[in-house]
Amino acid sequence: MTERHIMFLDALAFSSEGKSIEKADWDFEFIVMKTMEKVQKYDLSWSSDAIIPTDDAMIDRLYQAGKELLLETGIYLITENRQLLFRETDIDRALELQSPVLEMGEGTDRCSVHPRGVEDSSLPKVWGGNPGAPTPEDLFLPIVKSWMKESIIDLATCGSLIDVDGYPVRTRSVTELLAVRRELELLHQGLEEVGRPGMGMLAGESSVSEIGDLASAAAGGIRSCDSHLVALFNELMIDNDNLLRAANSIQHGMKNASLAAVMVGGLGGDAPGAAVLEVASFLAANIIALADYHLCHPIHINYVATSVPGCMWLQSAVCQAFARNAPSVIFCDIYPKSGAMTLELLLETAANAIAITVSGGHLEGVGSADGGVPNGTGLEVRLMGEVGHAIARQNITRESANKMVGELVKQYEHVFTLPGGNPGKRFDEAYNLETIEPFPEWLALYDEAKAMLKSLGLDLDLDLDLELE
Image (cartoon, rainbow, N blue to C red; front, side):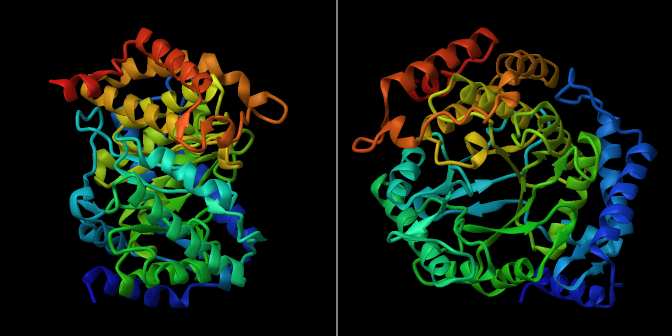
């Protein structure tokens, strides 16, 4: 057993006598009031005119605020209505024991992921997929192949199956177990068919309970070079199911991806308070979820999408805070409001990718149409990667990136208040299911989006130019 696993068990033992707290008291006394206190104490603020913050002193204060919040509140074990407290030595030791490099995949498809810095010229890794998006079984394989075949992606993920052999998937039932196993069969099949069998994955997305997660660890499922989710709930909560997920990796060896979907405009308040909770969540996940890397996925309380200015500010600020104070591998989810066959999807994806890349994050997505329908394709994933690579290769500064993002927001912000959102069209209306290629109309919108981005100063052909040299 490794030292990290001993630390995990020791932290659980230390917290075993945590006091009982009612959920309503946790939300108000430990989240609302404590977070507000930290925002005021550390003078944290944001402006929609500065979606990418450049005040390094404030960024450092944000990190300290999140760490202090975690030390005072701990996290809440929902299953037992109990507080789990941590020591500062737990937080610091967990950071020390985290591997400086995340190794994913195997063979010629092996991928080494390093923490990135602010305004880093190293290329962000591109994790292609629409994690969690509900997906019919008949569309699952062509959808995942649409991004697996894109040469710019380094890693793959997927949506969750909503049916298996014609039967709806239900939590904690036989169908959940079968759906997880089927998902993994199809993922491996897709990687084989595109010629990238060793590519690392974030998988088991059809797993809702620990039953599905344990099922994913069977032979032919999640490999030790792949990862799965260990979620913290909003805000600063976990349950026994996810503790079991973390513990399962001790024996199986797969990587743990911590996920904290904090609410911007929720219990923590606006973007600064939500960012404090995100920092605290990542630090907690290093201990209680044995996190090998983090997924930063804020949710706007009114608009859901990560392309909302407040969510982009949070992703930027949190990535910078860790880059400056506790270098960690952070992938930021991109979940636009819009879906396939809309220009807005491409512009939202680009804005989000700019803010993440210049701030030190890696890229994951795209969860098109809020990740709520199977309206995502490989084309917006391609653009996400191209934009991230261009930002890094051109050494774009935060100030310049902020101007780009501001211009893009003006072009798509209307979608947040559209009745019913802007879901676009299903995958099979955007891609040819036989060739797994985008229809001409979808390619035309992609070309239009690229032209707009080039007018803002991004050279999206740098990757191609380097390949030709």
